[in-house]
Image (cartoon, rainbow, N blue to C red; front, side):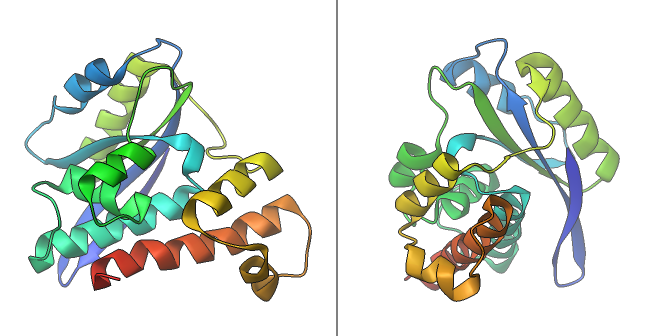
Length: 193
């Protein structure tokens, strides 16, 4: 689990991010019900398919952009939870975002984003979710060639873009370059491109 601040003007929120092994084999409905168990100081709980998540930075960027849209009054969806999904998927349409990164039956690992006003509250929710769903995967979102290629294909990132950022063939270096490409696509959602 990682806890980081996301800010909008003078307001500070906490974003908690984790990857969870779905050892309890929770399906879509059970996960949606679990995410709806929200305390007062928690603004969003979003489960996502972790297979297309580059890294924690990918979800942190989505959380920041979602908070900006929420507080800035230009959300594409009706709730901060869905807004996180829209940004993480780099899609402007919620239906496509759900199709791309939404949870579905048979997921072995799940990404979790929690946004709240208090660090302890966010940490407590993540701990609760991990305990109900399975076991936290540490380190989260470990890159391998197959995963990176799948993410590149999904987000329309070609090898030429990666090579413009690095000439290394190391998986970890490619993952960092890919993160930069995906985060730019995540941020473009706000521009309506």
